Amino acid sequence: MTVFAAEQQFRGVETALPSYQARLACRAGDAENTAGVAPGFVQGNLAILPEKLASAFHRFCQLNPKPCPIIGMSDVGDPKIPLLGIDLDIRTDLPRYRVWRDGELIEEPTDIMAHWRDDLVAFVIGCSFSFEEALMADDLPIRHIEQKVRVPMYRTNIACAPAGPFAGPMVVSMRPFKPKDAIRAVQITSRFPAVHGAPVHLGLPQSIGIADLAKPDYGDAVTINADELPVFWACGVTPQAVIAAARVPFAITHAPGLMLVTDLKNKHLAVL
Image (tube, rainbow, N blue to C red; front, side, top):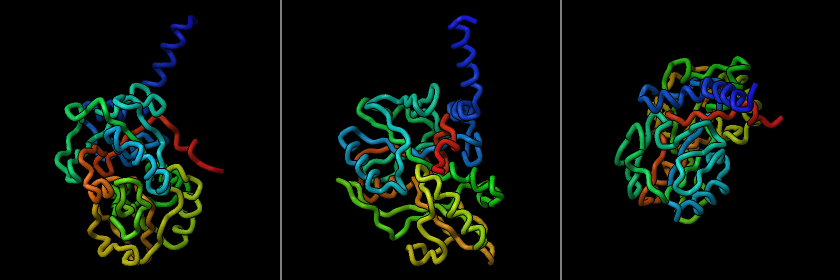
């Protein structure tokens, strides 16, 4: 086999990946909720900011690694992040985006070609969807996947460590478990620090500022049975709460629950 033929064969294998096909579906406008899409592959939250704010945001993520673990970052003005996926284009490869001006949400387009600028830097932040695969492998039920809705997410009274203009509340995602399963969930997710790691809180939502679990700030409500505890993980939607609180002049994020599917493997994120 020639070098060229081998390269073409390798490229054919890559383009057959479920993760790559998921991104193609986004480009075609055929994708919705990404929970459970391309099992085995890492999904990411997105925050895009002008270069003049990028260093402060990077510092914010370093100070707040639970909600904002960075798994990828673009060069200035470059919509490609080759380390995260073949032919990945940050402008088209998510189901839906959010465009922010002065901290206000102004638009939710299915691509951001019209909003892309040469001074923008994209940050991809780890997503709890990655550790859900490990939870399900241990026969722990994931309620929002069972009910085919987006994971419920809530703003809390837990303050993030500030950096430059970036300051605000931590956002958490919630999954209900029976007490014995909650303990197991803590053990399993502790092995995945690159995608939020162990929960930040169990039970008693009022103590972290959540008044009503039936009314999430992002995503959809799920059933919580009488014998279950709500378990809360730090969430990569936190930058959106911070962007709003800081009234950042311009930013782009993903729509909550509608993530970037990468070619990274979930199994490679686990710490043994």
